[in-house]
Length: 472
Ligand code: PA5
Image 1 (tube, rainbow, N blue to C red):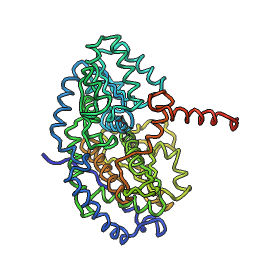
Image 2 (image 1 turned 180 degrees about the vertical axis):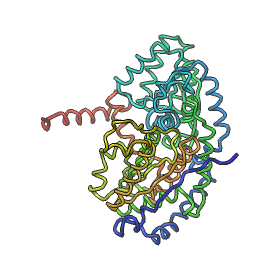
Image 3 (image 1 turned 90 degrees about the vertical axis):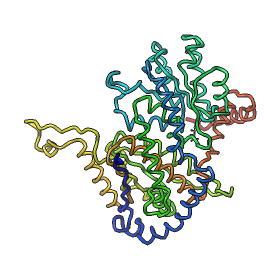
Image 4 (image 1 turned 120 degrees about the horizontal axis):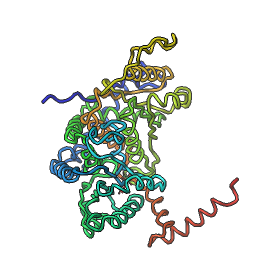
């Protein structure tokens, strides 16, 4: 079978020829950077052999894929609604896969036209949002599967939603019904969610050890909901495997992750620390959201790999073309020169909509007649990129020949591998997130968790001071 066409990165518009000497990179500079990166690529490949960077091996984990497919086969019949309870790396990939690979109004389509259940990913504890979901699904609990996803099994947001659903199901369907409607995706051995699986008899899927939350979309975390909704998860993994192989070469100019990491790092060092991902496709909008977490949580650190103080971190921003041309491009062209733009462009959309010709169309709008929305969207992308380069803003484009499971799998692996390399260039550990913990600990204090009494006292003082004199 011929391999479907893959992603291509076009980076001519970061060079001095396109954006001038002050803001552009020279070909010689690119070449010099490649030598440093070559060593990092080799190091990563060596470390993979010792069991590190486990996310890179997920596409080869056939047993894991088989287990996910078996669970889908068991759960799909009679399932009208799939609710994912998770947050951060346990939700953003699920949302991104669904937006990219199913129709935008999938949940509103009739059951006949959908390839699976409706999907709701609840990645917040907003009471109005969650309460509304329960209202809508209240009468359909027997036809609803709740996939609780938490690697640690301790996350307060996911746990609280889980407890609400557990109580609801137990009251409405009894303990057997409760166990039937829940599937827990968590660490295979440790954590509270794992203990609940053992104690209460839920079906479960493992989050593979050594794979962190934001790198886990190509495990059971993202694959179960995608496969339930009819997405071709084998193709997704084949695309990821292909990209992983391309990202293993130490010939940096042929390694897409290394090229991305090199360019974005080079600009980071030169003070362009905002990395704007700008997809010109609604389908890709949530992949930009997923990228934002991956880049931010992995690369924003205050200690280097040796534990020495070193505050670094590019700021990822996501925008959507053409919508955000009418919201942010003014800033991007005339505001501070601290940004690099990463456009996502689609060569062939799955469908297109013609702009109709009709008598009476005003002369000023006739240029649109007979064209298509796809043509207009891509014209806007090229025009915006050109306008940005005229403001000497460096731009690169990741081109999707088409959006399908294969290219989306490639995209995911590309950014995960680029994140690792960028972390190495910045001399930090891309896999931890120690700064997230403090907010969690003080939330525990506020919510009265045993062992967090000191945090409770501290936060009470803070809250009363904040609500004090300096308010208006
Ligand atoms: O990338 C990460 O590690 C985080 O974003 C986690 O995914 C997030 O905090 C949720 O954690 P957990 O899956 O343990 O509930």
